[in-house]
Every structure is written in C-alpha cells, then in structure tokens.
Image (cartoon, rainbow, N blue to C red; front, top):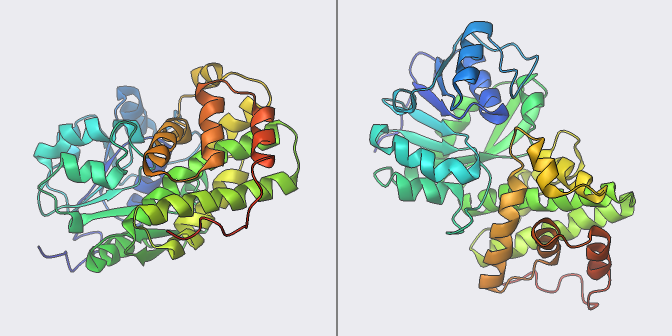
Length: 348
C-alpha cells in the first residue's frame, strides 16, 4: 500500500485517540502546525471544555489549545477516513479502545502508538495489541513514537527530541515529517520492539527511583539505580529480539533519565510517596492521571520470570507495590545480592 507523498496540513487527515495530557499535547502540536486534528476524549466534560474554552484543565491546566483542535466523544467519527491515527490511551485500555474503533479504521490508515506499557495477561506491547485487534492494518503500517518528552513541556514548546519506529522506513519517515517542528525533533529507527520496551519498562525503574528519593538516599544511589535499571531493560529487550543499541538512544537511556529524575513524572512521584511511607492504594486514589509503571510492573515481573530474564530491580518494585514489601529492605536485598562481573548477563 502506498504511503501518502504529501504531508502538508492540507493533504493529511489526522485523528488522535485519547485526550489525556500526552494525547492533548501531541494533538495540539499537530494542530498548531496547521493540521485539522480530530481528538477523541472519553470524558464528555473534557470534550466540552476544550470545545468551549480551548483548554483541558483536567489534564493540562493553564495551557491554551489551538483552534485547529476538534474534540469529540464519537470514537468512530475520529477514527474514520484518516491518513494517520495516533492512539494515546492508557496501556490497559488500548485493547478495549482498539476493538471499538477497528471497524472504522481504513486499511489505508497509518496507526501510530504513543501509549507506553505491556499488557498484563498477554505480555504484548501496544503495537502488538493494535495489530491483533485491528488485523486489517498490516504491521508495516504501524509505528511507535517515544522518547524523553513530558507533555507539559512539549505543549509549551520546550525543545524536545523523540524517535519514531516502524518496520517500514517509509512509514517512519512519513510520521517523522508529520510531527517535526522546530521545537519537536523526530528521528527514525526500525527497532519497534526496542523502542516499546524502553518506553514501558523505564516507568517501572522510575518508580524505583522515586522510592530511592522518598527514602532520602543519595545521588549515588539514584545513579546506580538508573544504570542497573538500563541493564535490566536491555537484557529483556535482547531476549525479545531488540537491537541492544536502541537502549543507548532516545527511547532507552533518554526516556529513562527523564522519567527517573523529573518531578513531572507520575511514576517517579508514585515511588517517592511510597518511599515516604504512603500506601499505593491511597496514592492512586488521589491521582486522576495514570502512572503506567504500576500496571507494567506486574507485566514485567511475570514476563521476565517466564523468559528467565534476571531483573532484580523490577522484581523488587513489583513486591513493594503488590506484596507491600518494605522499600528499605528491598534496597538492602539489592545491595547484598551475589557479587558478579558488571557485564554478566549482558549478552543473550
């Protein structure tokens, strides 16, 4: 199937599925570039507010939104007859949402995932879920966008750099051209698996980073955690066929550093509050937005055990979240593991 040759605002029809902070930020970036962007919001109140006030105070308060943004609660209308569809719903809702919109999506559409996570039961990545639920879209017309990018900074025009992965380089270049603006630089890559795993597992490591800071431990500890966390992500990725070089790039190291150190990270915030003594259920009750690492921790724990991949930090995060293990004892267990060569287990 041909890829559209023109990527200008007059030539391309765009739909964005999901009006949380990240979906709204990306939709607004495209709208400010001149595209007409149809944006699906699950909540009627979000749609009504964007329509009437040009603001999404539920997820991006205080940010004026483009007049080229057209919110809707009609999923079919937003998904139908589009050259490119961007899905930005929480990872645990991707399957349900994709099933509902599948009948409206043209087989000529390019579908781009900006959701980060691994499904709990199937252990599929988000592009794999999309391919399974919208089977008439070939894998070569699927793409993934990821990298170090807080929504609030993107929507404010802070210089940001991300990567787009697709098995078809022409699809990757098409998505690159659609998104690229002077404040949002886009690279391309063909390692879809590596990009998705980097974007998903870094949220688990970010919870661990928050726990470290919540416990009042030092910068030494955080630096060690990020470094060894990257080793875990790389180890899992290589087992699943990813290119190890991907994890030194934007979707690996870049996203990991941002999410483990930035106060805008919801996953870091959850971890920090746990380190300070709060219970997970109480933290989640106070959050409207989703901390993807909480659910992904369960997927990573079970997937790594199934594959026999050693991921001690991720396992300790799982036990702290779901078995209420003591965070300080988790740190002690990590620090007193059997001594070994630093690069042990770094090849598959």
